[in-house]
Image (cartoon, rainbow over all chains, first blue to last red; front, side, top):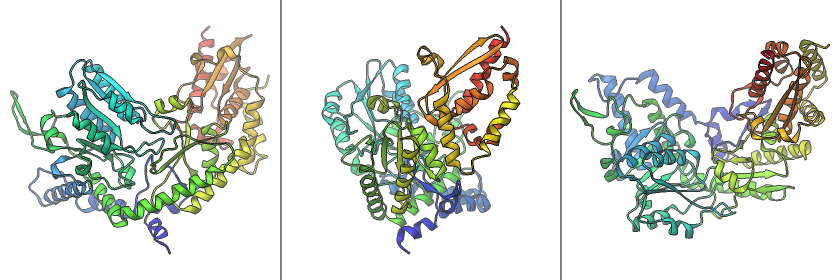
Length: 405
Length: 139
């Protein structure tokens, strides 16, 4: 048995059938499936460790607190953060971005200032900034993309100016698969003392991320897109920023002292973790990180690259194929259209064949407006996918074409 | 006049002929192509049904106590499903439409299209058709 087949065995859901066919799961950019180790970790927590953390002096509370804080260290080392307290646990990338959009902008965004995002951002990296800009009478500026689905970097340099307060860009595009040159983007911004937030939701499942090497100021990602549970995510922030910006939500856990007159906020990272956190989720995330580490980024990346190449090759000769996004550097995702066939029609028929793909606007309506299309068919890979599944998918597409072509 | 129940029954027995899902979907697609076209002037934002991954335009007229529906969609399966609803509901009195249970959808195996995913328009299509009927009922 080869390595990938062994890996597949760790994912119970992959052996199920959908519509009486073996499941082919190609919707990994939406969420990945979970390995046994993650499922088991959640189960074990509720079975024998469950307790509220950072309070009770009793045994279980201590145990849960230790596990939770250990998971923070694991997460910090996963992205090579300088300090564990630079890791704030959130509900997901969306909440991480909202936190920064709220707290950073409250402190630093002034009327007439600018926030710079890109034209390929997910709605979750657009709308929070739009709202912040409205609130603070600031302006949202957008780095354009070209037909290949790559950022036009020369335009980016022109857009950076003394009014820019923050740059927020995605590491990898969820709709086009483009890997953006975030290091170059960060360097250019830093030359003008502008901080950069990176949306890493689509990057962490596919490639090693080193926040110190990138020198990003904020990095956001979700557990569920990298084999972890839903409802848990991470905001990495440089200490100097997290110290300066005010809390996002308030309540228990984020305070040091409370009286009716005044409240002093807790230290990092607790200042940003109001209320009882998702302890099980954090432990599940740690199990997912361990799964990635044990599998190895080399294995993940070489296997997924092989699948991408194999699928692109197979699709290239398919009659009527139109790739949406043809970036030089791509991770995980292929978006395309097939002749005049509506993505929803294709998706429905593929589903009948047991093949899960994503169709529609992928929460990036501005990207689709740019290409002037209603949506795309998107396939996205994880480490457990196989070439045979790509073959099944391509056969499925032939059926789709037969029915609608 | 054929009642809604009778029309539903007719569709159920039509669908019993199909032993495989592909024939069923091919039939739905053909059905979509066969319905009378919606007037171009109604293919606007105003007649668009929200919440569908595919665009669906629906228009209703009230003639001699009966509601006449026309629809179009840019996805063929969605258009076929609209055609099924039109087949059952168009030409019926408003009250009958408002009260229709439409259990045929489940019985012909299209229940999956009723799920509340964001991509799915059938629920919204039915809701909009009933809203039109409700408005005509009050006239």
